[in-house]
Length: 155
Image (tube, rainbow, N blue to C red; front, side):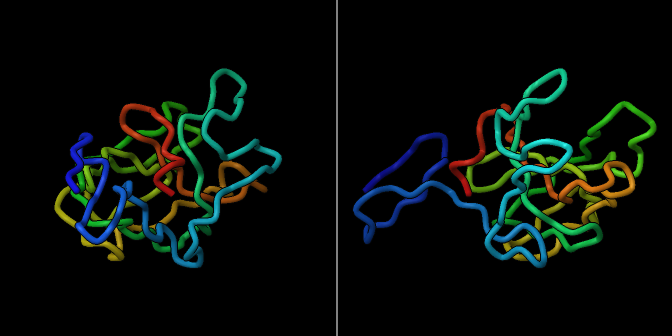
């Protein structure tokens, strides 16, 4: 079987169909990549309503200070600035990554490095203190595709 849809699929001769890339565990303490549902700050699914826009990613539950892992072999492609508001400086960090044919960003993560290569399951960094900016929110890593398409199918 041969697949070539922008490298978004992985195939072997054993499988009857092609399989899409799937994210491995992102956060310590959440081996199933459980998603943020609702809290006083909103919903964590793609397309959820916000005050002035829609949510352009999905939120994977992760405790403040938890270790964030590479979901598959990834290349670290630089810093992402999440906010322009200085009141949110405590969580204003993230990283752009690529791997498995995908380009995506992780928000609210302080990476150990902004460049290089990290193997699946190895540490990328730590979750920043979301509670200090959004008290009562379900702390999480925000996963957003570079083209802002829906990442849900990769989980």
